[in-house]
Image 1: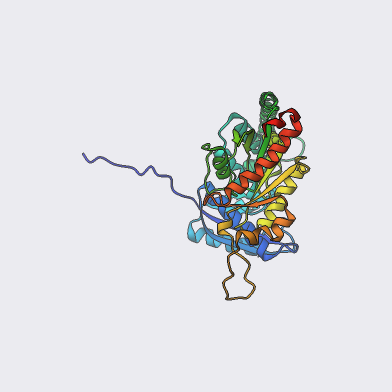
Image 2 (image 1 turned 45 degrees about the vertical axis):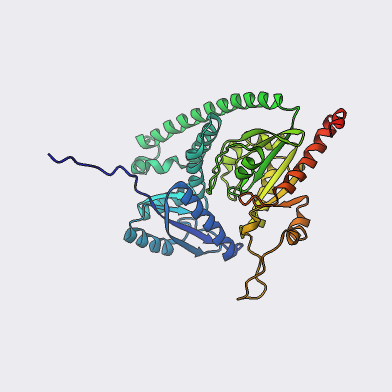
Length: 394
């Protein structure tokens, strides 16, 4: 008898991305957002087949992109056997229901996609609880779409059907679960606060920045540790703290979750406790991917998040990473721009507007000694201010 073998490999999902170019947004900015969304889809494990865009004054209230464009997407989805359609902005419950009815495939918005990636990346009990809390808060207003097959039973007095009853039951279960998760996180926060209190005598520095800018690579380089680093968004989700000694000065260095534009509000709220390392740090090391075409927007996004966290008034050292991959702006079309030297970087507007600033390449180990020296100067100053009688050590 012939033995049968079955292919157990999981088929990679095929995705279509959809974005709207509104009146207050440029095509370049919209393209950049969609490229970031494509990177998110890649991080989640799906393959992007096509990107649809639509120019509108504002997203359509019923279908986000308008009925005509939705028909184009529907035809493509059916013809190419697409598994998932991802929208670059948060969809309202009614938009989600209308689009699902029309396309008959799995529909995600940017927020849902980020939550899915976070759920996959979470390792510690705290991160898992934070993500689950954010997922439940996201799901709560969207419960009705799960019970549309029973919506005909809704009505006035005496017409309360099982569909609506089930929604209310689910709502109570979710609210109870949310309360339990909040209590669990409060307990974890207390434990973490005790741990941080035990470390207060040491100077503390925290790596912050947009996602995928090289924070974990720099963490590994400075602390000689083995923190997970990967060329994907949100490779690091849990805060990692390492003791580092530069020359004769010890300090604690923490690597935190990366920021991103259009980050779900619920996720920001849930992860504020994880970012206590940022709020309580003496020095922030803001890592910037200088090779990214939208690095100025990324700097603004990080600064806004730091302001929301109440950490914008701290001493910040800006580290422009990946200078080896930086592409200078071409002044004359058709001519290749000359690569900038380290001296050019030091005298650029980037250095002047973000002082103190340092330019490095973490992967190529370029200008690392100067970075260590700059970090040492600032760490030492905090240490001297805190322990003035230790000055004889220097």
